[in-house]
Length: 141
Image (cartoon, rainbow, N blue to C red):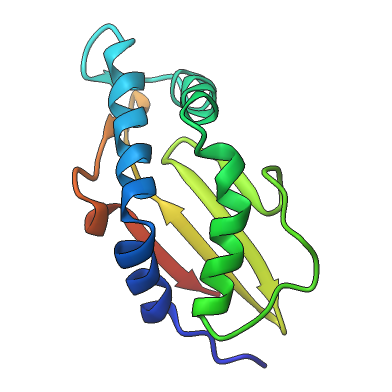
């Protein structure tokens, strides 16, 4: 089993891809500007415009290369070339998620631009991270 270095991935994203993460956050701001307020109860009002905005900004097509860089920073290599589609890259209601399965472990990188708040009325989607460092969430599962 691999011993993936999540801290090295965070460092790589902050130091080498900070501009890209900042662009993700700018895209999230553009999505919120299209809402009728500061929150929405519809996941599709997050995912669809975020995906389109990321694509227009040139970010979506770059994310597979970023995933490969993250895997290398973690101390591993991908067996196949990732693409800007599941299972490698998914635009979720919290932001882009990059995933790679490596020797029984999964590296999951989330560029967290939104958070989901839940109560008795259901989910509400809220703009979250405002800094590059706060947006980067790396898990090894």
